[in-house]
Image (cartoon, rainbow, N blue to C red; front, side, top):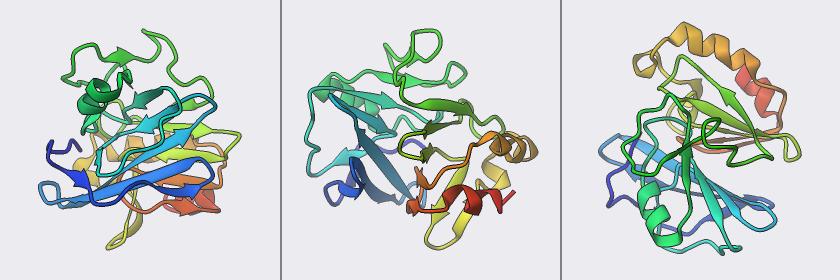
Length: 197
């Protein structure tokens, strides 16, 4: 889900795991919470689906922005303009942003992360797995909203609900999950998500 440019997180990023930061804001236009994440690597940040921040992150010298699907451009253009971070997405995602880079065609923006394509959700739906951190970052495929709990993206938002459920079987085992919509799941995340299928 893209965000209107005025949508700004009311608070600075919270460090929810060592080197893992989260910030969020409610979107009246979408009637859902939008969450963004940044993972600190040795000399840069890997930022997922960014919305704006009231307080900034301590930038270690650089960064890269990864979009988890075609609906999550959010405020990536402003981050690119303000900080010079390149913006990357899946080749099949239709995103209206000049100079957008595509993984595979333009290189590998985050070699420490394993990209897992999740067809059946929005175009370009991709989960990102970091083996050393035992962490997966989700776009829309799985959400964890306070009002609804942990769930696979509702069918009405899916291109092919059955295919999305099948594609989730490709996920490895992992401890922690971050969601573009809803609270993180810290501990036993892969078991909880497997139980949804």
